[in-house]
Image (spheres, rainbow, N blue to C red):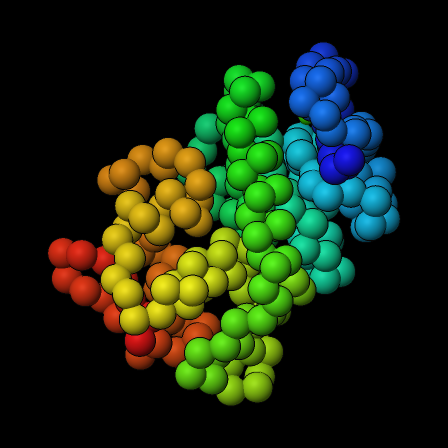
Length: 219
Ligand code: CA
């Protein structure tokens, strides 16, 4: 049975999420402070963490950066009460796999959890991808260019992986949005272009080609 850590200090919300997840067949545990969430996240007992940003002791961003800093690739879905786009980007850059703004519908949270669980399982089937000197280890989420390790955020890694699995093919922004972000981002959003830029900076500018009017291709 997959086990989910719920880091949330509002009892009303954690009870609601816990009840829903248990009836969907998951084991759950609730952490009510940042330090407790961090300890449990690093315990290796969980398959995913639902992480509230507003936590006592240590906020969710700090918990997440400590989790990633310790080399853990635990899938994390961030819950945020704040509506600002800057927070969201900070959350994604900090290594979150997905985020949801409160208030949210439980069925939507569950859909995202299932999607993340599936992509983790799919990824564990094929451990290493390699293409023209770029290597991705999908288990440890480590990336190397010409043998040198490159630090990628969770989302950057997923985008690189998607492009690499389809090297030579053009993928449209919409395809990348739905496969990498996994839900209905605003189709007018430039988030794909922003992350392509991050990847070009980190992996080399000539690796990802822009195909005008169509999308992107790993060459
Ligand atoms: Ca809170």
